[in-house]
Length: 117
Length: 406
Image (cartoon, rainbow over all chains, first blue to last red; front, side, top):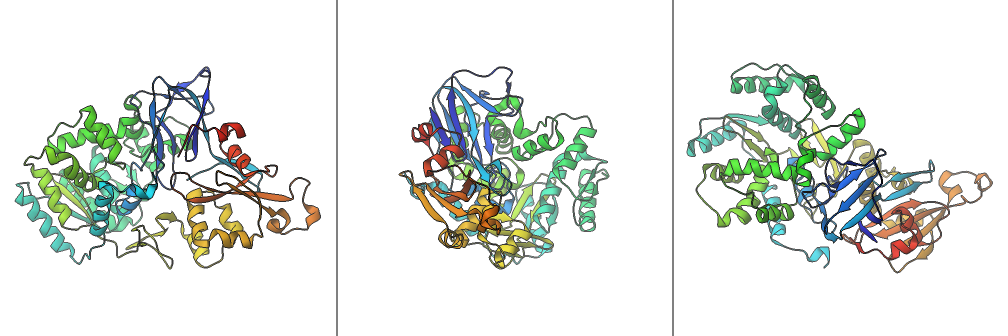
């Protein structure tokens, strides 16, 4: 089972890998320029990370995946915070997921890089 | 439901805010100071110091220093325009009734963090999750900030905001439903005094209306809002004011935008925006002066900046310029194009390695926002859906069977 919200996708897996640590929050991705972020809307810590920084999610119940505005924006840039070009919120079913990020290929240096927004 | 159809009260609030942001501010500093002092007096506050900031950088720095002054005393911070700001630091010292010695040079988050670290702190007042993440990465240390407080999980910044607002408005707003309401409906920062007016407006219109009571803080905020100042950070003892920029240019949607110069000019501080997206001087000028080729645009690392330039450049024009050939088009709206590698790299055909003769580009539409993006995919990709599946780490079957996509 796969869910996708913008440049983030959740892929259902059978079990969590070993040696995971709780992530610092439930945010799955941040937008560098836009300041937007994708997060799981629960007060429980449900996002975990391995040594490489790969993220996993364990949901014991359905949780909304939200795409929200930036936390801190320049006062003059109110439209960035209030603009309506956000991805829609939807519920992710309980289960265990691996987080994957949108990637693209660069033919100029032949590398695969994570898409940033 | 289409994004365009989601027109709710929030949109109305937004349009009202934009109107507020397009006023003509002709007040001079003396007049602003007089008005602010009068307002404080009207609500029986002590006369505040009024610190009028010339640009956003100064405004943010000074109001942050105000919050952190005890922790940052005797610290070295840096900021541009050192001389200009010195006199204001002096005023701040007077406000706090002790001299604090901050050398202002060129503030950035790393410097700020180092200051905290030098004082043995393991928790930092950095509100922006993004900054915290970047700092953690750059410094290879775990950075705990308000936006990253583990125990509060995703509610962290909102939770702290709620606490501040409880205090400020003398109300209890931690009931779960109410927090959920705010959490789900405001959708922007509700912390940071610099944005207090924005939340205040929303809170008062939508949240406090059933719970309205006489509160001099609320009323002061209301009056400050009505002054049409560009930004304000009111404290009991000092009120920081941000004047309107000398120039601020927006597009018809109200987003910061200008195709012949800066969108915002505040004395020495200039910002370039196109359709609400920030660009540095170099990329902006190259694009505006028509010195950017289609390939240059596609090489831009940030996809929002790339999208913005693609839109202005016109995607069809770009495809023609690249002599792109449509290879495949899927029901999901993905289009896979190829362009000749030797043309992109401007080399002889026979110098191109086998299997790399055609660079592949995927054109696709965001299912939520309807925006059209383009990205490169590996040489071996042969269908549009395969390209999108590869980009998101799916198998083709997985991509075609996505449970929910937005």
